[in-house]
Image 1 (tube, rainbow, N blue to C red):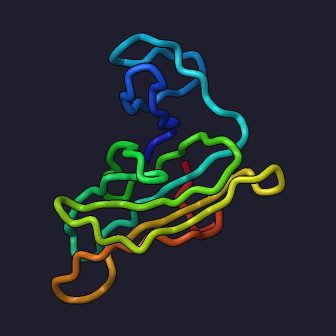
Image 2 (image 1 turned 180 degrees about the vertical axis):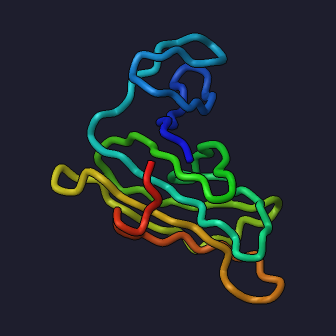
Length: 136
């Protein structure tokens, strides 16, 4: 599990995991400033069949890196509406989760899993609560 914060560099577009605001981008060395309005925590549920495939993460259709099997990440975000989707390999079939970050609701939690069934490649992202997320 990750205790890092994931952010996209505004200068070069590199997705970077950092621990604190002001850390440099690993590609262009620009200091990265974290939005302070809210946090979106994502969790890729472990696969009970033992298939350890990770998923690509998309926030409002913008790629935000990769989420490994049973990994949890936090993405600092500003206030607004967010559509969270995931992809697996060439498949982009995903039932998206949509969340709102507001001054009254600064934290949102989304978990993703493969839809149950034989030979399915549909991913299901669903908004959840903090108590259903793994500890960071």
